[in-house]
Length: 138
Image (cartoon, rainbow, N blue to C red; front, side, top):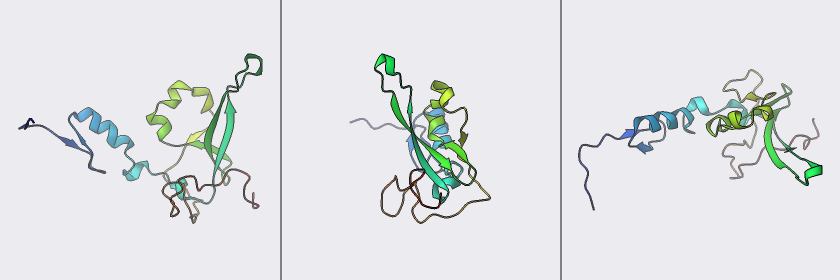
């Protein structure tokens, strides 16, 4: 066992995660789930719906493509993507898939609290947001 002395530790201000390098800590803080700036208001809104669509299907090449999940605001009639898409560099890898979508906003004037929210619902189901078209009021 080694005991290290005089080590600089960088600690996330939001969750307490520790890093040996400042750059890694700064990047983590910019995407940290405990950072209030990174929690979109949409995640608890009753107007949020999940979507799914097939991407890259090519019947002639026998390629079924892949299923992509997303988010949709029924109040603003707008497709959205979460901050995680930026962190994973999805925008750089697949720019055409996100060109008509916006980043989930942190604030919204039409916010309506939902009983079960996408992020950490009471039931523990992280997919409590209904799919587009599942409710009768749409």
